[in-house]
Image (tube, rainbow, N blue to C red; front, side, top):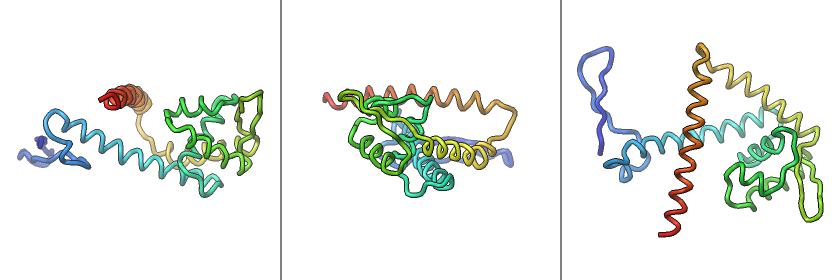
Length: 182
């Protein structure tokens, strides 16, 4: 297993630390740093999911799943009607039935309206859905965004990190296709 050598400011002695990973058997050779990054993504993803659901609850809508929250925000995005397939594509969700189930729940909760055009169903937020998204934004600003401190460099760093994650998702998608063909 790869070891990192770090030096602390309090002393000049070196401290050897193991990478923090969820699966040591995947953290050997060239993949040690990737395993450490993947573990970071796992815990960050779970923390984000927990945050989004609790923020929505604080905004006034309890018992929503992370999928419900993500779908609602995307439908509200740019105040344009959206098709089921476009919602799933944008959120990079392969299983349309997962998104469809969430849409049915959002319609049932009175947050999303439908408009049928031929065989196509288009979804958009109604006044209640828009108000909930606005309240979510307010809670997010107060509880999360207010804790981002500094001189403004975080925006650049977060932007760079977001670009990196989107690029990495493409690599994982490509690797998934390759693994399917094995």
